[in-house]
Amino acid sequence: MKKPAEFYQRDRRWHPPALTPDYKTSVARSPQFALISLENSPSEITGPVFGHGDIDPTDNDLVYNYAQGDQCAIGERIILHGRVVDENGNGVPATLVEIWQANAGGRYRHKKDTYLAPIDPNFGGCGRTLTDEDGYYYFRTVKPGAYPWRNWINSWRPAHIHLSIFGSGFAQRLITQCYFEGDPLIGQCAIVKSIPDPDARKQLIALMDLNATVPLDAIAYRFDIVLRGRRSTLFENRLEGN
Image 1 (cartoon, rainbow, N blue to C red):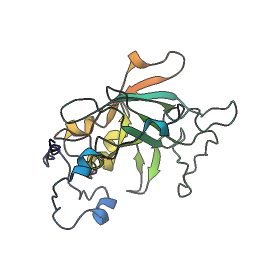
Image 2: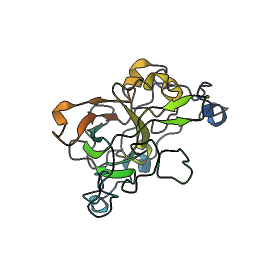
Image 3: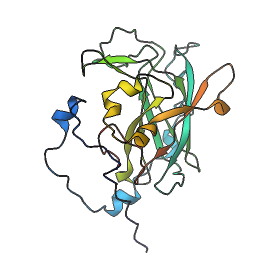
């Protein structure tokens, strides 16, 4: 039986450093010693996988998946879609994509979120789906609002959606987030600026896609995700998923 191939090594010139002092929390959580490189085991390369039977057909529609009765989530409706690909550009089929986000006012449904924006009783803020045979995924949701955070005295997070992607093996899980084309807060955010390479930053921006927009319903944004390799999609200033 042929042994599974190793994943590509990361390119440390592409990936940002863990310590970026302008992003204040990175000072405390960045590693103090050199990282240890370990060879992947077969279990990390080949599994586990996620079954189709665990996904409900409405899990990818955040406009309605938490709504009560004939209600729906409040806010600008959007579609977030794209492909999950490996380091060679091949679509990764049947991989689990999960998202979570703030509501249209910029508040998460979380007991520790004390931002003054109101909770939307019909918006849960999370969803999931499986990619198809070509690695394609699709969500309908509402565009999240910006919110303040305690980095500097007047720091604001751009509108963003968090994503968790399980690849073809356990070591391929990626946790990342996407921003939206044209948001002026992207260039001001210390988290975004912790990525030194401008091209890497661009990979975190979902581009407006009028061809996929549903007339009179939702504006579409396209966000393709690369799981591994030199041009893999990043998460802030950490190497998770790589």
